[in-house]
Structures are given as structure tokens and as C-alpha cells.
Length: 404
Ligand code: C2E
Ligand code: MN
Ligand code: MN
Image: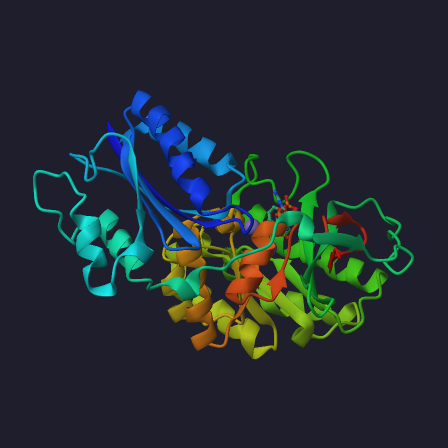
């Protein structure tokens, strides 16, 4: 199947532009062998390449392109399928946009086209091409330094909290993972992650437990989270807990249970955030809405967790107007390399900013993900890059520091 791939990249500083022509000649003989054609645009700083050919060949050539040290910050913009090649001349022509004046440059590029139909602007690939040629969208190019630009220095471990001793025979194990603001070196909140201690016990919804029991266990497990917070002396620190929204609906007096456990452990509702996952909510939205109103009325904050992983995420912002949105790790993973992920994250940021909702990136594992997200305007992060969840304790945080 004829597939199309478009990416953008940044020429590294110490490659002379003259070398590029040599590079293209070499690449062309290789591409020809695999039936990959297209066009390569260069504007003095950035490349824009459209590759067309059999899918596997395009992907393997793109993988090789990604390994080329002469450019960096590659962002894949489009992957699509087409009935015919748009730029079918043998090999890959290098087109230097600087050699043309503004008025004629786009037409000059389009004149390279080989499609038997006129190249039309309703084609996404050509829209990308036009946007690049006209240098629109440039404000969305975040050039990030390489991963080793930062060192991640752990908190002095004596400052991080010791593991609390497990007291009674506990049904749930609770781990804490911080949500942090790396630039201000502050911990925004701690998330209590609860796991059943043995298989088939609470929260394990694959087991034969009835739905009722699952909701009751889910709610009751919050007691363990608040108790650990007390043991660790979190004081005024914000504490996030996960809750199935249906637990609030199905268990009688759920909100009162939470409030009395919060108080019993020396905490206040204003420091508690309840995280709910979007796809659970949809089926019984009205009942959930009532429960959420009660939570908010009691002073507890609301976060939508795993945002972007399910469906109808945006409509939840209309229904609930949460205090926080946690972007799902599937969107965060390799965001620095993916045009679609970048567009989604930027839309989430814009939307949440208009609604004064705090955005948190979760599951951050790579320095490049963090740097791109920070450049896009996110300040709060959670993930193994900074701190892994710690059982019965508060983990040390690895804060980024510039390497000189
Ligand atoms: P979640 O609320 O999205 O919590 C984050 C999960 O992602 C945790 O897994 C955490 O260990 C993991 N994580 C954090 N940073 C990274 C990272 O950088 N990379 C990767 N690969 N993973 C990371 P965990 O502890 O297994 O929790 C899984 C899910 O279980 C939670 O996802 C949450 O939805 C659910 N859960 C946890 N506690 C409760 C609870 O009390 N009630 C309910 N209903 N669900 C809970
Ligand atoms: Mn969560
Ligand atoms: Mn998650």
C-alpha cells in the first residue's frame, strides 16, 4: 500500500549547509532501491520531508532518518495512505526555500508535483507542505536540548520520609507518588496509589467480587490512604486519591464516610483531591454528577485522571469543570516526537487555561517528554523520571539540574 509520512526536523548547528546536497545524493540512491520518493524542503534551519512509498520501506527509511545525527528534534507530522504519489520523481529532491521569493515559492514547490491530478489543497499532506512553506505554526516548534542537558539529582534521602511501619494486618497496600513542579522545586501533591495485598482481594475487579463489593472496597481503601498520610505527617500537603465514581453513587453515605475518615486522620477536605477516570463516568452521568456536587460542597477537589485515554473526555470538562486534569501517559509518551500528540496536548492546555483548570502530565519517563511539555506550558508532572511510587512512604524526588 502506498503510504505517506511527513516529518519536520532541525539541522544541527555544526553541519555546513553545503554538506546537505551530498547527503541527499547518497540518500537518493538508497531510497530509489526501495521505491521511496518525495520532497525535502529546507528553510535554513528546518527540514520538512514528505516520503512516499511502500509502507514498510517508508517506515524503515524514516527509522534510519531518525538516527541521523545531522538533525534533531524530529517531529512526525503525518502518516497516511494515498492512491498516487504526489512527488513521484525518482529519488528525493532537495528544495531550498531560501532561493525563491515569497510570492513564488509555494508554486515552485507545487510545480515539482507529479500527480496526474492537480495537486489540491484539500489534501492534508499538501496542507502541511503549504503551512511549512509559509512558515505558519512556527510558534509551535519547541526546540529542546538533548536529554543529557539535564542531570536528575535526588533529594537528600534523609529529607524524604522514612517508610512507615505496617501496623495491623492490612488489606491494602498504599504507595505514594508525588506530583511536582520541577522548576520551582516544589511538591504540588502526593498521590496515594492503592493495591490489594493479595490476589482476589479488594480493587481487583477481575476477580469474582460483586460490583457492590468492589465499590465498597474502593471506598474503604481510602481509609488506608488517609491513615498513611497521617503516619507520614504530610501536614498541609495536598493528597490525591483515586476513586471509581460509581463508588460514590453505589455506597450509601459515601461522601460522609470520606469526610469522617479525613477528619479522623487530622486532615481537612480542602487538601484532598479525588481523581476519577473519565470512561467510568459516561454511563451514569447524572448520578455521578450528584455525587460530585456533594464532594465539591464538602471542600474536596476533583481531578479527571487518564484524560485523553478514553472517550468523551472533552464533554466531561463541560459536565464537571474539574480543578485538575491529568493527561494520560499514552499521550505523554514520546510527545516530543509526535505531531498528533503535540496538537492534543496543546489543545488540552489551551482549553484548561480558559477554564482555569490545572494541567498535570502523568507517566513522564523521559527528559525530552518533560522538556517539551514544559516548553508547551505545563508546570506539574508525575512520573518515574522524577519519582517512582514508594510503598508506605514518600519517595525522594530527582530534581532536574542543568549540566554545565
Ligand atoms: P493512575 O491513577 O493513573 O496512577 C498512576 C499509575 O501509573 C500508578 O500505577 C503508577 O505507579 C504508574 N506510574 C506513575 N508514573 C509512571 C511512569 O512514569 N511510567 C509508568 N509506566 N507508570 C507510571 P499503579 O499503582 O499500578 O496504579 C494503577 C491504577 O490503579 C491507577 O492509575 C488508578 O487508576 C488505579 N488505582 C490506584 N489506587 C486506586 C484506588 O484507590 N481506587 C481505585 N479505584 N483505583 C485505584
Ligand atoms: Mn490517579
Ligand atoms: Mn493513569
